[in-house]
Amino acid sequence: MGLHARENPLAALAALAGLLIAASVALTFFYVPSDADQGFSQRIFYLHVPVAITAYACFAWGAWKALLHLWKREPGADLESYVAIHQGVIFGSLTLLTGSLWAKISWGHWWLWSESQLVLFLVLFLFYAAYFMLRYSVEPGPARANMCAVYALFGVVLIPISFLAIRLANQLIHPVVFTLQGPQMSGSMFFTFCVSLAAVSTLAATLYHVELAGKRIDSRLRELRELLA
Amino acid sequence: MIVAVTTAEKYVAAAYGIVFLVVLVYVLIIALKLGRLERELDELTGLARQRREAEAEQREQVPVA
Image (cartoon, rainbow over all chains, first blue to last red; front, side, top):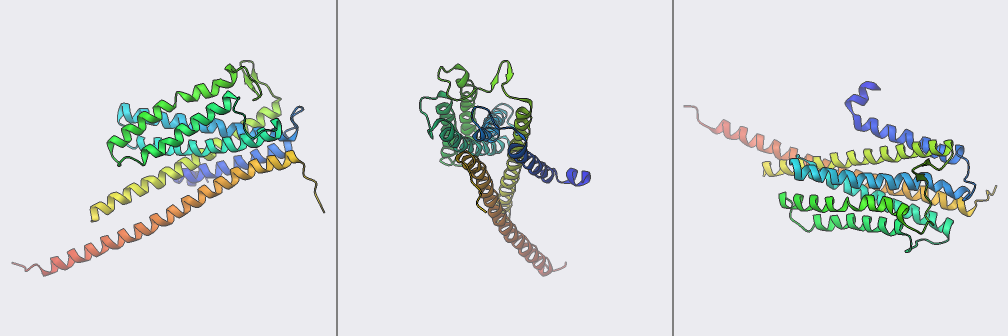
């Protein structure tokens, strides 16, 4: 097993993601107690919050790779930035979908425009969704890579604003669980949350590496086609 | 046997179901892409083989001094 993991780290990462997801689902449905206030529906928290944190992490990773592209001209950084933002948009859409379901059962609304956290996350999501419009409207090459990197870096400013909005806003319909005093939940809830966060981030890392491998093979095949032409 | 499912349970199941479905669709897209890459690789391998055979034929036709 150890040898196989060294030979194929992506397969090992996928297996780890599978194990963690199974553990997370088991903990969420059979171990963690129901919330005294929200009841059973609060279990969406163990999916929604890890997915949202993963989306933020993907956007931040995409921006970091964009910075490396502009700063150190690191080869492949543009492709890595693109794949990270793609993952961020996937996990961002999942955040919006799971959040809407939770909002409907808890607040009675699918969406509340008065909530800064929701609107800012939507702005962040749409900003990065528009990244693909820019990328596919310009011919591939160094100019496109530079433009996309600058765009990805601009978007990263929205991440701390979106994250802190809930703490700065006056309306507090959206719950605040993580405060300066620590997580406002019991030990079993925090443990389940940590396992869920590890599961979702490992899944994102697996999908990121799978997509990146596919893109790299695609690019090498294109190069090979040009050489053979 | 009929199992009574509450509204909250339906919403939680829907949230997990959506995530599962999106991951499934993503894996399907990646699988389709891998199939395309495999076909392209086969095509390029065939092209490289043809080229090597053509070069070998040319080498055989060159008169020895």
